[in-house]
Picture 1 (spheres, rainbow, N blue to C red):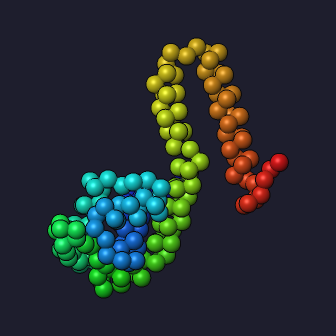
Picture 2: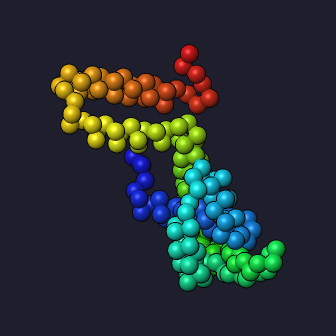
Picture 3: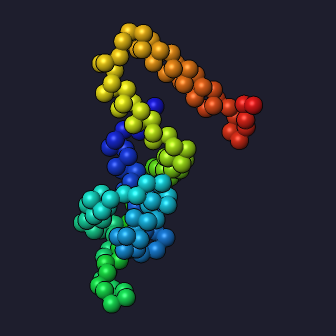
Length: 159
């Protein structure tokens, strides 16, 4: 079973606080750190609302600094934010584990599966019964091979 969408949102919040625990960051530094950790670059449309809620909740403070001649907002974990992370340590561990798995999923090229499923759905209506049976066979073989790989002991090889 995999986490629900709302759980992913909570995990992103925890991971964002975790990254800010390391050191204060401006938005683009935060996005880069999250990308390095998760394997996908979150948009500013995701990050800004999270940061605004953190500031509202007192988990993060904002400091404006002059960096290379430009005013830049730096986001810093507050004492409340640190307490929040400590209180949610087990959830943070789950979030970091999921982030690592997601990063490996993307590195393995597995996100192509989503595109493939979309192609199947879009084109299924035009397939003949024989083509649908061939597709079913291919999917069944693929599923068996994937489950075989997943059942292999960690670090091991089935060959």
